Image (cartoon, rainbow, N blue to C red; front, side, top):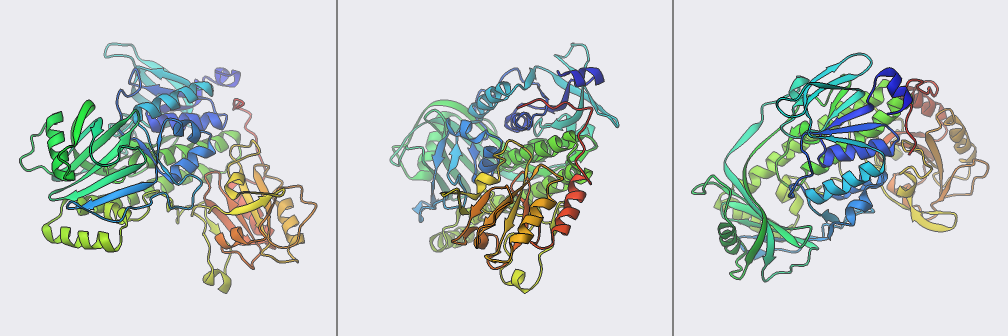
Length: 565
């Protein structure tokens, strides 16, 4: 605890309840931003087995931005292909890594491995983890939050004090109902999931670089790698005649042979045998005052496409940079307030999408199977078949109604070539910096050490007359030092700005942003989503946006001492 916290009675700037993957990622992200953080967890150790175990491309991008992705990738299998069967007949393999991201391959590991990796990293970053404690009360006031906890059933009440609280304590959250944010889940009848993590021998490849999915009569199944040389086999199916208990290894082997058509398939050394039924829902809000929900604490997710943990990891990253800016005095209230609508809205959208995909997957009849088989041969798009979307990699997550959005580009050129709008992910593009070909993303992930930096991309639109306006825009951003200008030049060089110059003579970045032939300013948030666009000669509009988002001028908080990275 630092001196400022001790004096004012705070145990940490932020307390995170729950040390699963989402809570640990939140803690790591806060420490990345220099925020003091205490994690509180009821379990006395990490998960002994794997539940969630995959990382899609977009969450990997966000994890890379806070320095976590590579550590997780070291203990993960990289997947680039999905094999898809309908009633025993294979369709065209699907190259799932065919997305415009620096991290296109899906990573498959295990929740136990993920938790151990994130715990080690959190402690390395100076975070504090308190296990074996249960939250029994949450009281907040204008200055902070008091968390009441107990160790064991008979332990005395203890209290911890923080400025903000993040509840990442899972689907059975104890904090969510305390905030009046609980919900009644929708239950899906007449279906069950049976699952095993075991060693697999069969006539298909055992290399952990691909996935297999099977549509079969009355059900849907998958075979996925789990870290350590294991595979996960799951079977979502009509529950008629199925015992309502965990399956045996022999039962799982029998159904696996039937579904795959491989009578040599053998399972051994099971780590985990389980069964479950399904329900889903989303909290009516993701924030109450100084308390926020993240991950399963705010939703029950269906097991379609492995989206649940990945969505929660986005919550973690989104929450952390907002809290860091707020604690530093760099943010107007709209920054923190925007979390609720953005992430709550995204979870509601994802939940509805998963429900559609789940009903399509499980509640099928023979006619649907026939149509499915024909469609899979003609348009082998697994994402749309699983969830009603082709965005399994979560690359299309956007916030179209965010209060942080402001679009000041208009006119015929914008209609003909709109480019990504505020709220959408800033696209990747190849550029040249100091004579070397590099990635635009490299300059969107805070390389200058300011972890909550906003990137201001100043596009010249290939115009030789844009130089003066570009320099004016750079100057206009100087009152807010976390706004980091970059010149993106397809035309003549511009000297005198003292900021990174990214050459785009091939026009790849201009085309990606819909700005070929149009000088413009694009402000990108710390999470890689576009916040603001305007014509390059309207730096007054940039100033107005910065005042709305950050305040009239930088104000450093005197009551918060953020730890150095």
